[in-house]
Length: 100
Image (spheres, rainbow, N blue to C red):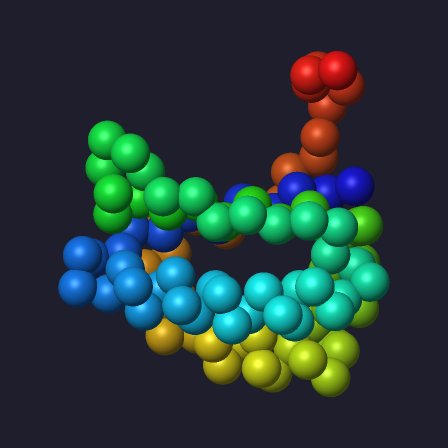
């Protein structure tokens, strides 16, 4: 399993649109056999900060399977307006250190 983290800084005037965009994009993630789970979290102390966490079956599943799937263009169309707000977009490997 690979975890993708995408950190955004979203101005207040665009936050509702951002959350709506990921709400629409979620349908494509739900349909993907490569996406295991996802969540969008907003900062409490700094509400402009968002973290999108997506669990993928593998990097190849994300980059080759999902990105070449028929639904990817719809996913991209939803979230592309916020690409300029990305502060980090990286893949991570989960370690064995986690809750039971």
